Amino acid sequence: MKRAGVAYLFPAERRVALSNLAPHYFFGAFRESHGLDLLFDGEERSLLDRKRPNEVAVLLVGLSYEPSYLTFVRYLQANGIPVLRSDRPAGNFPLIIAGGVAPSLNPQPLLDICDAVLCGEAEPMHDDLTALLDSPATARELIAKLPYAAKPGRKPRIIQAAAGRFAVHSHPELAAEGNEFGGRTVLELDRGCIGKCYFCAARHLYGESREADRHLITHAAEAAFKRGEDIALLGTGLESVSYFDDLLDRAIAAGRTVSLSSVRIAGFTPQRAARLVAAGVKTVTLAPESMVAATRSRIGKPLSDESLFAAFELAKEHHFRVKLYLMAGLPDGDSAAEAQALIAFFTDLKKRKLTVPLSLSVSPFCPKPGTPFRDKALMPKKEYEHFRAAAMRGLDKLMPQMPIEWFSWRESLLQTALGRLGTDGAQFLAAYADTGNLRTAEKRSGIRLEDAASEIAGITVATGRKKSA
Image 1 (cartoon, rainbow, N blue to C red):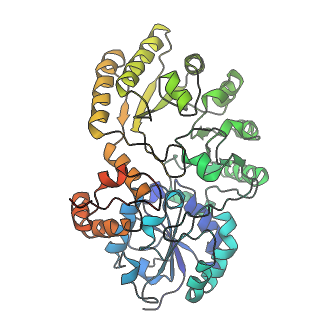
Image 2 (image 1 turned 90 degrees about the vertical axis):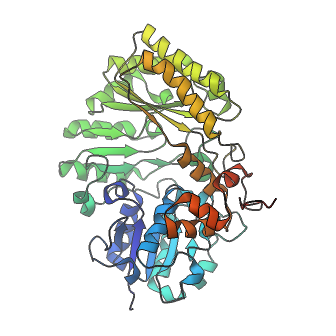
């Protein structure tokens, strides 16, 4: 079969995939020069050129978080592409190159699956990717020379774009395909993080906060307004971006509305709250992570209780809905005390008459590679269940109408295990591709997820293979 061209796969359903900005970046960067097309999970042909995955010469893959590895390998299997690289003779199948946040944190489980795993941000890779796409036949020689191409048993170098050297936003040609932001144009304002949270990969993988190119982002926002589109702003510290308020003012002047990924509590001021209202923001997302002040301080997020109540005062005054995000099982904490503190917070909230339309999301803490908490433990499943039961006993009485989302412990286990597995993780993923069943994959590969999750993180230690008796 003759193979030509390049496709970018984001292994998710189309609307979900296009809510991530990576497909938009690659489409804008390589559609005109190399005919890059997009592939999505559940679709047999590419978006525009209607090519099958096995018909392209190069398949670029974006993996934003570890459980998407499962979708990725099932996608390969479903489209007749062997999962393991050793089963794909050169020239008979697409060259598979993966990147994204998850493999940048730990590329090892993908090294026997992909022909290359590139670690870091795409913009500074542009010239190398151009050379690679110009000559797929010599790609392996080029990849071998790249310092940010992962290798077995070695910590990868993470390449980053300098401040002002990136400006990723929704591509106008893809607007008709929709996204999870109500079809808004999505703009990324910063990378890295202004905060110093010990659990979060954003700061420890991508460094201190860097702003996107102001001119290009402003131009993209104004173009969206002229098309009659609203905007969504993404970033880890939006309110710290130097031109954040200017974007809000531009939206207000154009009569358009804005939605936000989140607002840091420290940046949620009366002046900003008023501006957000004028920009049509109806919901603010707050993530204190814990209702115990000592825990917040210990994880590098030293917020006072009064700052939390002040945020709710602003939310009530300006009629915002609030999405509240917490973590269970944070390192060196007491889950019973955390549940009691959660109930006590909502008790106080009601006493202060600060209840607003509110939803709560709780996820188990996941130790991420590269962070100061990389070697900490994932809380046991039973402890998570006990925490949930204790919290719900109180919340059912205090906030019976409040929507509560409890994230899956199993998904957190997957994130932790795949973040710690070594190259033999490919055997687990290949077994999963065959069966679609995690337990069967564990038996076939000899790798237990709970063993892998309990190992100390690092690419030179044991990788989670079942120990012999």
